[in-house]
Length: 92
Image (cartoon, rainbow, N blue to C red; front, side, top):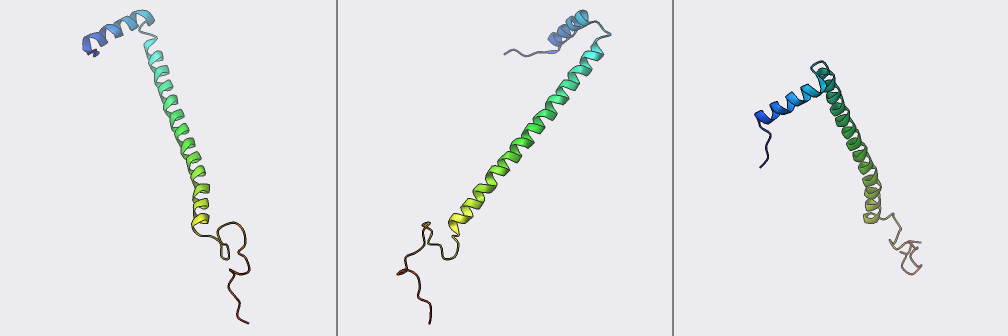
């Protein structure tokens, strides 16, 4: 389809040089490089924040899962104490 080849790239560079001049090109390139660097560092920061939030959300879920699978001793798992008839008799 539409690919930018060497001739098209050269035409674009000549037009840029005419518009900005040869003296401004290093400054423009430096500013462009700094903006790309800042963008990448911002993206890394956002990724690390999302990863940290994901870990924080997974940790309470893991605690809830273990509480559901391993009820506390003496807990019937229904949230209310077992009736006296279901409790084991203690040896006298």
